[in-house]
Length: 450
Image (spheres, rainbow, N blue to C red):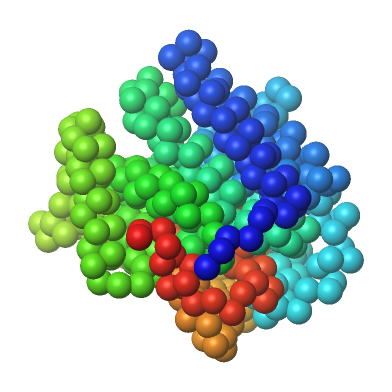
C-alpha cells in the first residue's frame, strides 16, 4: 500500500516534537555539569513555556503539558518548592486553561468527563464540612487538572499523528532522565518510590495511547516501543509494587496489539535482552527491589510492616467511614480524623502521633465522601472499561480496560495529586470518543515488527 504524503499539520507536529525532544535530551546531557536537579528545573521550564504557547498553538501545548505530566513526580520535589515556582504553579496554569476552555468542556459528551465533573462538584460541596479546607482544596486541584489536560488534547490532537509524537517526547525524556536519576540517586533529595514511578509510568501511558492510534510512522513506532521497554525497567527498579503492576498492564497492552505469536515472542525476547543489559548496570538497586518484594510476602513480618504502614491507614479509613458513612468527614478531613482516631485496636504505632494522609485515593474518598462519594469514584474508574466495551473496535476495548485497571491499581497507593493518572484518563477519553480510525490494533502495530 502506498504511503500518503504527510499533511502540513503532520509536518508541524513532527518538527516541533523533534525540536522539543532534542532540546530536552540536550539538557539531560548537561547533568554532569549543572546537576540533575537543575536539569529537571530547565526541562520543567520548557514544559511550562510550551504549555503557555499552547494556548495559541495547540500542538505545542500538547507537548508542553506532556512534559509537565511526565516530570510531575520530580517537579514537586525538586522545582515547586518556592521562589519563582510555587507548589501549585502547574495547577494554576491548568485552571486558567479550564476557564479559557469552558466552551469546549461544555460540549464534551463522554461519560468519563461527566462522571468526574459530578464527583468533583460533590467533593467541592463536602469541602464546606471539612476540618482542613486547605488540604481539601489541594485534593480538588489534583482531580480538577483532568479538565485542563483534556482541553489541551481536544484542541491539539486533531491530527492523530500528534499522539505518536507525544509518545516520543515523553518516552525519550523519561528514558534518559530515568537513567540519570538512578546514576545520581544517592546525592538527591528523597522521593517516595510510589510517586517517582509515575515518571516512567506516564511515558508508558503515552506509548499505550499511541499504540491504538493508526499511523504509517513505522520507524517512530519502533523507537517508541524500544524506549517503552527502557521505561518499564525504570519502573521495576523503583520497587514500587503498584508501579510494577501498572507497568505490567502496559506491557500486556502493548504485546496484545502485536498481530502474531512470532512477533510477540520477538518483542518479548528483545525486551528481556534490553532489560537485562540495563538492569545489570544497577546491581545495588536490584538488591533493593528484591528486598521490597521479599518483604511483601514475608509471613514473619506484620501486615503493617509488609505494607509500610498502609494497612493501618486503610483500617483507620474504614473506621472513620463507619463513624460517618453517609457524607464522610469532608474533603481533606482524613488527616485530622486519623490523628484523633480513638479506636486503634490492632493498629501499630505507624503515624499514630501525627496527622497522616490516607496515601490511597480509595480510602481517602471512602472516609471523606462517604457512600455516594465512593460510588461516584468507582463509577468514574469503571467508565473507561464501560465506554471501551461499547466500541466495535478491539483496540478501544483494550484501551478502556487498561485505563480502568491502571486507575484502580493506582488509587490503592496514591491519591489525586499525580498528573500521570489524569493524563492517561484525559487522553483515553479523547481517543475513545473521537472516531480516529476503523483500524484494529493489528493494523496499527503490524508494520512495526516486520
